[in-house]
Length: 202
Image 1 (tube, one colour):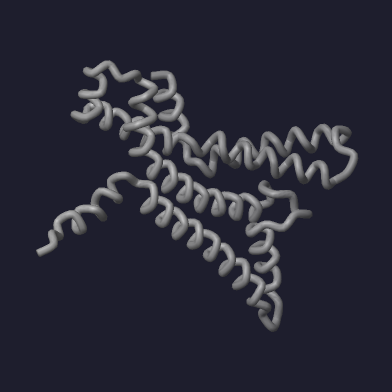
Image 2 (cartoon, rainbow, N blue to C red):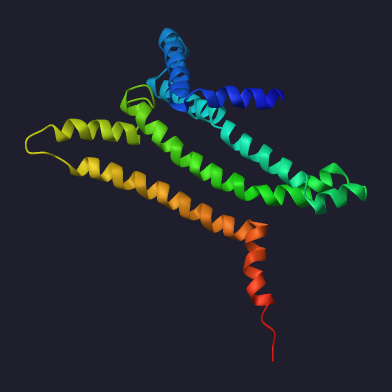
């Protein structure tokens, strides 16, 4: 119930606003304590580490909700009830029946969240509260491309390069997730095996 309350509260706040607020607090702390860093590179490294940490701490609520709902559904299935009736331990049931049937959700949600995190990073860096300007990022590239496109003649290929590479990364991640899901989802293996099992030699 406590975990459900926590992820319900996190889900009620738009992710981009929550992430931006946390990043701004971190940035204010770093600006007020410049003596903690000997070089600007150390500050940039810590900032990107804290940004990744914030993205991870604020991005688990959706996956937690899906896993909880799927686990509650699997708990009521007949083969899980039968295993419980035969005295199989809870850990063995989780390992043998629950985890294999939820791992595809973990993979798909992780990849979708990865795509969303790329967008969050681009937006935050574009408005100046994301990755340090001294480091390369999609948001920084798009921000620089915006300046280039205001020139005469227009320099458009820098914006196109950032857009193409961002789409390529997101598309590659989604294709990878589909392949891994097809390989590890037990239900997908059952569906693929049924047509072969239905064919009998004459």
